[in-house]
Image 1: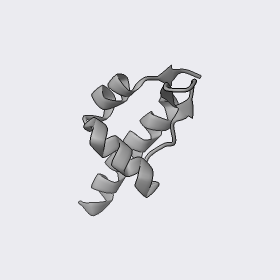
Image 2: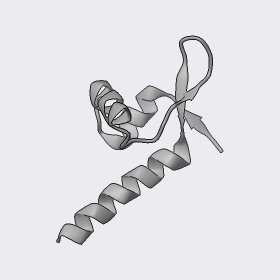
Image 3: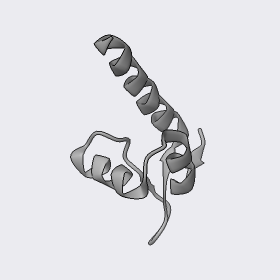
Length: 62
């Protein structure tokens, strides 16, 4: 299991920081893991699963 920081999440998803946090508030993005007082990361496999779900949604709409 690998944890990735925000900049890598942004690079993988193509989303801006504000959009990631908006999706978190809406409950439609994987939750972050607290690493300390001011540091968070995401489980890489959960972010990849989220990306795959977006691809599946796209394919179902076609």
